[in-house]
Amino acid sequence: MFKNKVAVVTGGANGIGKCIAEEFRRNGAAVCVIDKAAGDHFVGDISDKSVLERFAEQVIAKHGHIGYYIAPEYRGRGCASQGLKMLIEEVKDSVQEDEIYLRVDRDNPASLKVMLNNGGYIHHKDDTKLYVRIGK
Image 1: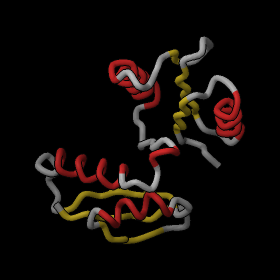
Image 2: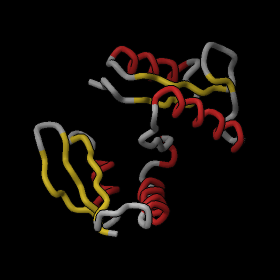
Image 3: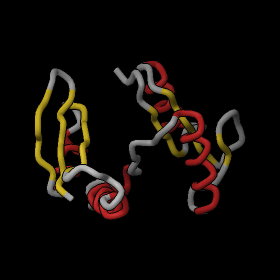
């Protein structure tokens, strides 16, 4: 289900976070955990920007990317929409095409909504993905 996906789990060393991390692993995801508790994961406090940056650098070095992650307590507040807006602004001059091309899994309506909220439209689709374009 999550093959070729990278799941970032904050607070994933114990309790519910650990259960979530294990479930992602069982379903094929590469799981990156950050927690303040000691263990065989990245140890650190995500409220410290420099710690979070080091963690992100490690994840990218190992897995090549992080799609994005919004902690549950911040979902539904427009964080992802604002983040994509900022990213588009940052890269639009370096993209030679007239549009920015994105794709999203069909079973991810929240991410599709983020793209549509930023002026995207569904250009085409296949069995598993929707291909979205956003004009610069």
